[in-house]
Image (cartoon, rainbow, N blue to C red):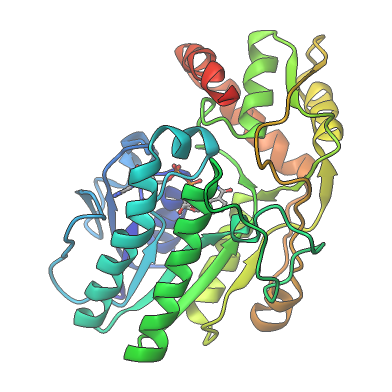
Length: 326
Ligand SMILES: NC(=O)c1ccc[n+]([C@@H]2O[C@H](COP(=O)([O-])OP(=O)(O)OC[C@H]3O[C@@H](n4cnc5c(N)ncnc54)[C@H](O)[C@@H]3O)[C@@H](O)[C@H]2O)c1
């Protein structure tokens, strides 16, 4: 049985990866300090003999017993609301955290795949974004803690690959959504749906002409799984190229939820990227991958999930909304 360590395993993406690797017959070790994750995302796996959970901070020394074939480093605060609140931890998990994972991988002879992000492209001047584009990031802006941590993480991973000959993979993830996102994480999709469920107007930051491209989580997980098993060490974009303006997206959510509320417009936060669309030519050619789930279908599943949550989750969202404006 192959053995995989998934850091950030109790988070949104990490927990879906745990599910996928269990389904593929792996022994899965999830490691998480629960700073933004939730053990409820993985508690359905606790009874399995081939699942283990380590409650641990990846930025500190890490070790797991036994053999290890793969490490997937997904631990990191991932939404602006989180990394603005915990900027130092964000920088540490992207630097000390990846260093610890790479060190463990060397000891165990494991392959490492890291979760990078479209944020390495910053506010891009190239559209759509190809892997060759070096990005347009403000290192001292509020988003710099996340963007630069991820850029450092890529550089460190590549250094271990070239200097130590470690097997490494880098996935640049574009906006992904699906069940187990948190209503209060400040990302646009849960924010809109949360507002619709509370019967509030939907807040658009700026004039809504900025674009995003949303990928359903199952599609992303398939791309990551294929990349891990490929022999490609350089970064690969994985995301859905179907691009939409935030204003149009808000209108789609109004239609989906049947809310009688409307869009309201507020000031755009500092360094908010104006456009975001992955060029997935490489993922198609190298991994034979492209997204399969339409936005209509993915949003329907995600909305059903949010509707099924206890009502108190909606109030947590109300508490965090003020913070989103910082
Ligand atoms: N969701 C997206 O659209 C997206 C896009 C690009 C990149 N990513 C990357 O994917 C990864 C997962 O993102 P997510 O959306 O699932 O976010 P998430 O917040 O749901 O998950 C992150 C997990 O990492 C854990 N964590 C954070 N710091 C840790 C530490 N020091 N030690 C141990 N665990 C720690 C958190 O508790 C949480 O469970 C992140 O690395 C993120 O940067 C996500």
